[in-house]
Image (cartoon, rainbow, N blue to C red):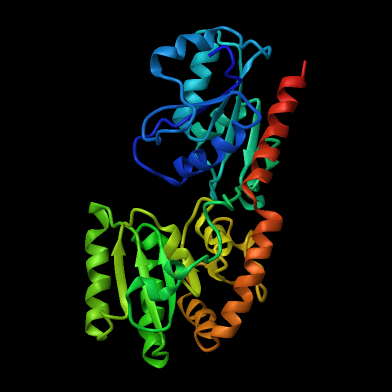
Length: 346
């Protein structure tokens, strides 16, 4: 523990976008920092501290005057404040905000007590009332990469058609799954070479919504061409098998899937929810439409279904764009600059 300079708490059991960020970013940070995660729901292999080691945070690390506690949720900001105020732990507090809405009064109160704040996009930063740095999330280019063999081709999926259009993530209205299904019901009868793939889990409160989508698909006679995979153990090959990826969210925090798709050499049609509009370059790496605009989404998708060559060209440009602007190392460097500023401040 004397070598741990940064603690990245994950005080939530269920997997979320925040958890995914920690899982991807911390190993990159660990190459140059003494960093450890704390909390449940994290895979083996990450640098971790245990709950019984928490009292060690009351002592200074060997290499710094204080540690950094990097919170990403309200509960983690509260825990950091308690450690510093109640137990006098020598630490500075950093908070990363991805919210695309006005924060509640309690959250604003917590944020004002942070030593540094990071926004994951310019849009999320616009909802902050405090000075902040914008550091956008990156994508692991080793994990998400272009097709490398036959197992990465659509033929390996065992589905009908020659091309696939995908929509991955939790199945719920806020994710716009119904907008994607509506577009597919309208478009697929006119484009017989294409199959739609939906991957992701419907939690109990959204099961009725998922069932209603399947009923609409069955009524349209497209159950064999709009395929629900459920929650798959490894989504990465599916990104590589897609000729087009669609991110139709109505609401989003940041949203990593467009970056993961583009890193897999797949163009993206996305809504302007979350940070999507700051990732996708319209006319070069995909298209962006207004959140909730079903007809606009359908029209943007149709352009690619009608011209698979365009999808291939934009996929190549999407890969180059992500490699240039969104490598995970760039995010780690941006966060490290915030840390260094705190450590060097009097």
